[in-house]
Image (cartoon, rainbow, N blue to C red; front, side):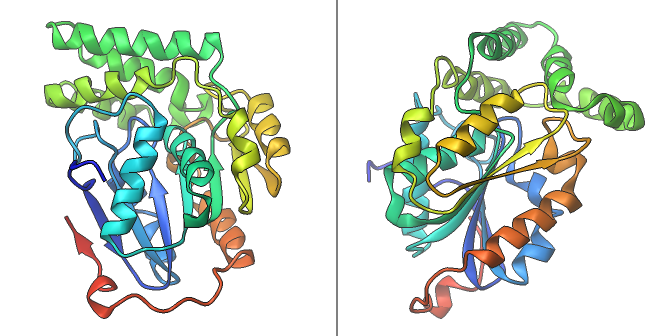
Length: 281
């Protein structure tokens, strides 16, 4: 498409292809707990966006660039149409993909997302961008994780996982500069983001899946997005903060599997055997 390398990715399982898209602070290994159940029914595709650790390099300036990266990956894997599920940053990318290439997206699950990034939401993201820049200049790297954990987790989950959060905080200090540079670039794409104009171009069945205790993406914005989608549905997972796939993986998986089962792909010619074996690149 434009000479850029294909996103780093992993493929597991067989069946209807399902593309899982990360949140901004994730890598595709964060989906590990989901893969065994999904791979029994789906060819599960996972990737890191440009700017995340496994796909280093400068992130695109906006989400249309991410959509082009994803189309390049699907072409590389020989995937015509697929289901797409993304969380947070990945949900914004999924919405752009479904709007810009509707013929490639059979169904969409957009988790922990809103119809736009408000000024207040951007102020929090901008604070993380500044913290990343300061970390690269010798400042505290742990502060970046402190800002992330402050909005990502529900109060109850954070209290029960205090030791785990502390351990993760310590690990952030040892991440390479590329992680902080990439995160700052990814977050910059959120400034002024408004996906509501895209809704009319999303023709596939679409589930907006929200977290009840989400402090990062206001529930009203997710509900507005679901209403604006022609085939939109809404579901809310109780008791979870923004990090839905971390806090409530079982509940999230059950909802995802149920939605996918209700919206199967039309019969298509199977992919060549060499493309169905899976693997990592």
